[in-house]
Length: 85
Image (cartoon, rainbow, N blue to C red; front, side, top):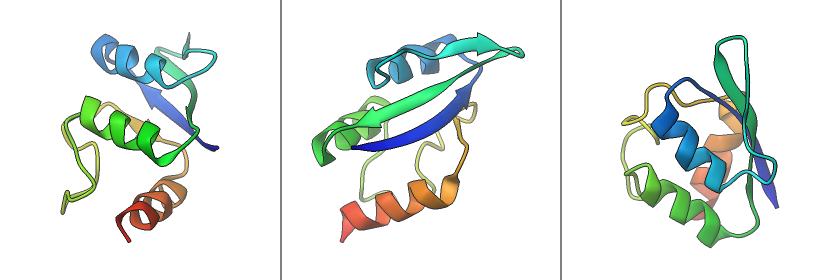
């Protein structure tokens, strides 16, 4: 399982994130925070589809959701690259 800690401020983004969070995101300090959990590659691909991205994206993933921020972007990039290869 891969887990990424995220922050977001938009309710639409929150709704997408909640689908991939076992505990849901919590609201504190004027933003939503929590873990996204991906049990397998397909979960992550479904998440990308939900946010309008794909593994073939030449840009940083999730650019269409500027309020979505990951606490450790290097881990996210490594996982993203691993799935592309």
